Length: 234
Image 1 (cartoon, rainbow, N blue to C red):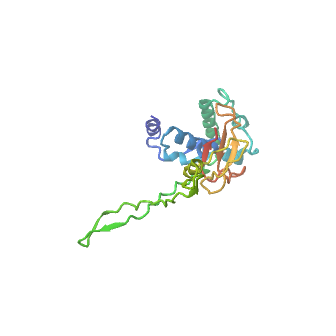
Image 2: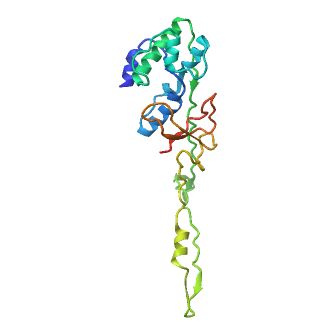
Image 3: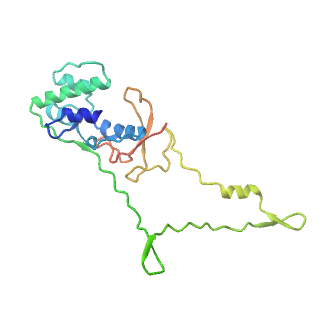
């Protein structure tokens, strides 16, 4: 439905750009929600314009200016409810138009790196008795080395296997690493940068406020996350 609307809205207009207030929407939350709901995210969401950047270049202000404050600083009145998705989108669009009317040039400010290609291991060929190569050979089965059970001497002078408790402990599979909720440590969980993840709590008002998550371990207040890794902790 969205693709059909977008095709009709941009017919003959050429290229398009996603405009947001901040990098959180396209860099983190959209990627996580699409992955959680099994929805394929269109590739045009991988490049966007953070309207905060051209706004600060044109009108100044610190990095903590809210969307409502920016709209008022541009001489516009806020329309609708605060933190309502549709109303926030409309006010973002109105601020964008106002900045463009003032001659502010819009360029892409953020993007996501494409996912690395999956490397496939080369497959071995079987040689037939006639000398030609036949079908692909299946990978050799993994042979597990079985240790003969140790014996102990029974009170009657004979021998018997080790206690069942010791055998059960040897046969138990390794336990998976659990992600500890916020306030603890992410343990051995690493992001796509291959560094330990960084935990956080959603502070923005809304249905996700107070939820804990783990993200890119290279996150900084100035640059944000380096990779798109994101997972909810609870």
